[in-house]
Length: 181
Length: 149
Image 1 (tube, one colour):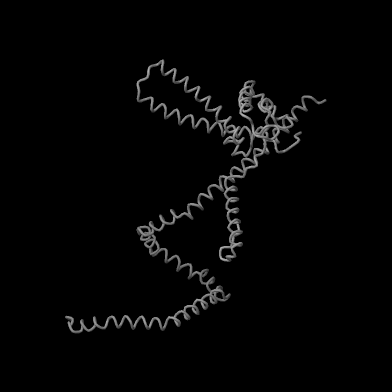
Image 2 (spheres, chains in turn green, blue):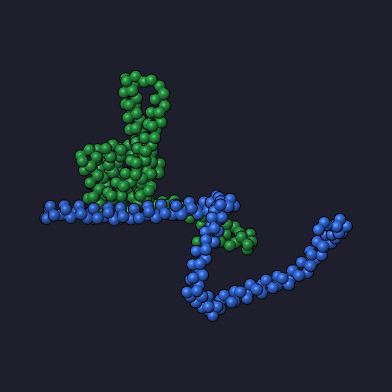
């Protein structure tokens, strides 16, 4: 049994990774399409073509790593995590440090190697941690962030409240009206 | 009949006076016409609010004669012609463009779009959270079945 319902389970995390994979591949596809179109203007030998393919593969791997590491280190949420409203944090609740984010990437690859057995650990761990989380000392929790519309609504209400307070202070009855939601 | 030039000159000379007279008459009568308009409006509102008038209108609309009248109106092609003319009018499309481009409408559409996406996202999140729990229960049950001790 879990000791806290705030930890996120396997299905939600898989959906988030699927969204991330879609984003990563879409960007990679667009970039490679652009690069391919530009390179089509030049005559390129077969050796250079092989080299470019290797360079492209390396760039793709670097892009994938920097996508995950960048988001985990800065906001704790990749785009997929944001959609699913989940967040990666250190076990003590603080932000993930860059070196642990790199360890987590390595852990993600290692978890996938034995037929994704490293991820199945999530089903049995008290804090719903996979092998990658154990290695990087992280947990995946509910994100406290509001949705886009909820954020907009909250911002609008805050502005209205501020306007109300200001106009009340000035004693102007005409602008003191605040529309009810 | 050819117009007399003298008459024409006279009428041109009196035209400003006529305009002044008309404006003076309108200004004098305005309080009366305004009061009459208010009274008429109140009278109409009272009449439409009255139960008997509403009952009468309802029975007129529901009667065979009323239905026949509506059917005749549509069969006459008058409505089709009205719609055709309306659609051919450039003013209508200008109005539609103005409305579609207005910030209030675009803001409302974007707000609705975001609201819908948010609703879909919320539903997906709710279902995946439930699937998380279900999968874990299943995994625990399978493990327990393998190790009955």
